[in-house]
Image (cartoon, rainbow, N blue to C red):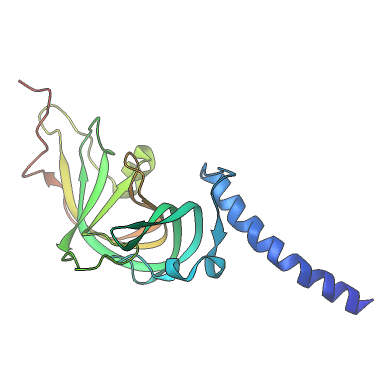
Length: 200
């Protein structure tokens, strides 16, 4: 009887892995039946390399992904989820815009473009925080006004979960899902706010 129970448990393991990736993808709105999904180590070996700016994170799931050949280089397309512990520093900016998320964080260093682009490559650290209410609370950010339309501060974060989108023009980018604010510098008005394209 115990042997039968043990065998039944073994048979359930692959289904549990598939279900976990499916649940995570569906949770975030990625449920296209025609495109593959996978979880962690079950994903293709090519996807096991962490993003260039997040070497301490590892792949949790890949959703609606494709691997395309562009000019001889394998290029990833899809939504990818990573977990771990990654410390990052940069300048947080709060600036309402019709074109980007109100809260963004830009790193202080850029990675030179390599001769051969590796998987999950980013030229620079650039994070986006879509949930304005939650981000405002976590960073205690002042509200923009006509006199001060843009605020910025130097911050240090510990990221433990992140979503990265590659190859989708309108949403491509890196989005921290779980993170802790370790250091927070004083806010100041942005030295170079983005010009209003509709301004006179």
